Image (cartoon, rainbow, N blue to C red; front, side, top):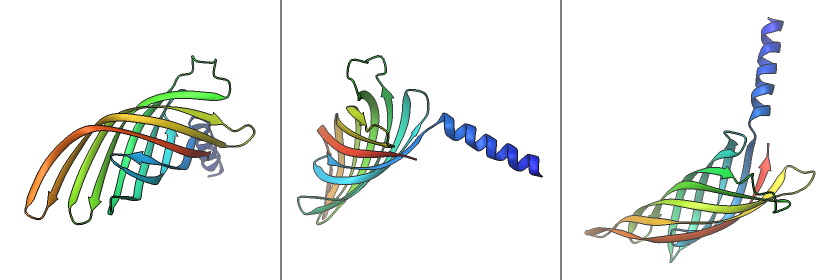
Length: 163
C-alpha cells in the first residue's frame, strides 16, 4: 500500500513538472464588444499551449454578452532578440451569445499574435495580444432573423499566474 501511494505521488510530480498550468484574467474587445474574462492555460508541449477562456459579463450597445474561447498558442522561441519579451502566435475559436431586445449567437474563428513578459522571480506574466478573423453572427429580433458576416479585430491585455 505504501508503495502504491509513493508511486502515485511520484507520477503526479513528474506529470505536473512536464506541463505548466496557468490561470489569469484579461480585458479587451472582440466581436464588436468590450469586456473581460478569465482563462485557464495548459502547456501541451515545450513551446505550445491550449487556452480556455470565459469571456463574459461584457456590455456592448446596451446588450449583455457572454461567451467562451479556446485557442492553440505557440511560442516563437527562435526569436531571442526580444529580451524578456516572449512573442507567440496562435489560432482560436470564440463563441458568444448576446441578449437584449434582440438575440444573437456569434462565432469568431481567428488568428492571434502577442507578447508575454515574464516578471522575474515570480510566477506572474503579463501579456498583450491582437486577433483578427471573420465574425459570423446569427441574429433574431422579433419575427425576423438573419446571418451577418464581417471582419473582426480585437485585442486584450492580461495577467497569467503559474500554478
